[in-house]
Length: 275
Ligand code: A3P
Image (tube, rainbow, N blue to C red; front, side):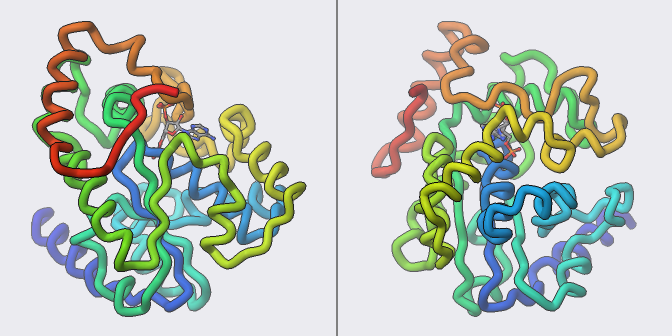
């Protein structure tokens, strides 16, 4: 019964009807989705901090494939979006091949964020501890094995980042890296919005790790603790590139590098493992 409901919901996602000026934020989990969502929301609100604080970022930018009746906004975000006949800012973790076709048919703009896989694995293993919808990540060793084998939510990081990289030439798609997220004017330009230098600086400040961490609209602390247990770890945990170095053992790093080389072979997609 639960499985049938899941299949029906997936079908509902697939027939989602996008509008031509909708914006889709597409990422693999833990690549900086919330950060980008807040930046985009700020750009669309012309840098008005109060308007952005008015509602949680996960309401401002609904999660396409979210269907949890326990969520504060009551379950299916597809239904929520369909009821909002205006510009949609939408977030998804679906791989590019599984996006509802209407996003492509309507020629919607898409922003993709990528982040190096070592930081993604580190961030995910900590997130799996505090976000109770995920299984216990066990040890870092076990989590790394599962993550390189694609046995995590949304499966393979490699396929996700590479497939979208290939699409960037033929679609209205901005491919960003976590390290470049402070380039607010580049993002605004892609969205067709004029952002003066002063405004860009204001947005960078408001969306900095420190500011977002204390902002209840961004830090997910409004969710009940049985969903995200902030007494274990905060959602905005470290917010840097290269944190993996504190968590990978030498042997794990060697094994990860080997797997990484095999997976990205032949692709011109290149990641910085640290700044
Ligand atoms: P860490 O766990 O490495 O700290 P997502 O929103 O896709 O789930 O990604 C969460 C990751 O993005 C977390 O990484 C989080 O701290 C980081 N993040 C969120 N907002 C950020 C910001 N303003 N600056 C830098 N990193 C940020």
